[in-house]
Length: 466
Ligand code: NAD
Image: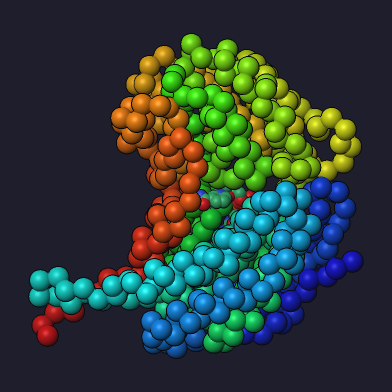
């Protein structure tokens, strides 16, 4: 069996001080794929010390030097694209297409951040003050399993662009992907200690990063519950935080929406990454007069979601059980199952595969409409007028993303402006790598990507009297 028993400290691959062994189970086969030796608090402190020692050099590096490093990081990741894709599919049973797009983004983000850096004004004159944007120091990057490479790459690229250094704590569930990704990042030849990677448990390595006085900032992507724990701990040493948390995104279909387009799109966005995406559109808000037509279209198009092909497995047995429990709860609360339901998809006798499931007659106060399920489960909710649609869409503790479809441009735009969400997509899904990404309310704090993302890793200092 494959054993992962190295972490990355100060530019070297070393055996962790931590001794706990953790089994990595392939969710598509339920077989143990590999075993990882987890880092502990001592390893974390070593990583923080290495990052602290490297900070003066990284802070002093010119813009051109940082841009060159970002280019090299891109090249090093791109060079091993095929292996990265295969490892991602093998580690968590996701569809090939999702792995391909994640890996592509993971190399591209280094170039996108390089472009932001090329134009970023680190100095501005404000009246009599010269304002300089300064890097923060050691930044702790704590990431989830659901697109491991992408989160590491996005956060690390911003750290390098800002002139800080990093201690990266990826999810323990992505240890195989992390091991390979670390080899890529190492090959880029950055200064020792510029980034350090310690795979370990959240309540061990993550907690040490949260409490350590030498860590200036934490950038976290993960659940809202853990984000709150980190924010509470971080305040003790006044660490800056960027938090990218959960979501329960609304997808509003106006009564003039073209259902032949809008329903396939709705099924796509509810099942992104097998439903395990913070940005998944898991509440479909439809006009009550169009409910029958919507149901008909869902039943017509649901077959586009094929388990084992474009819908992968839930990440763990625990997550699979959690999704099953939500499906049961939806039924108990009185929602009506339109398709899907409990158990595995027909013809599958192993793997943590969830049946793509659509509920109708959902009320927005039901658990399936309020809580992040993290599986391919869609709740259809009806409204009578635009005011009610907006009210339902915003009636959630989350505010990460929203979707609106309809033909009347002014009406769609007016609704988009009133939705409380970090990103709103109109009549489709789009990519703008420099646009800010992040959430309102309990979906997080701060933004990533583009200049908004970089500013989150910098502190303004006003120098006067010159
Ligand atoms: P999680 O919160 O369980 O874990 C995320 C990371 O935090 C992991 O590395 C974990 O080990 C670590 N962690 C756990 N406990 C910790 C603690 N006490 N202190 C410090 N670190 C700790 O999330 P997950 O299950 O890995 O990912 C799924 C969640 O992530 C979902 O809620 C999803 O919405 C969210 N997510 C958000 C975004 C976004 O950009 N907004 C993107 C992807 C995923």
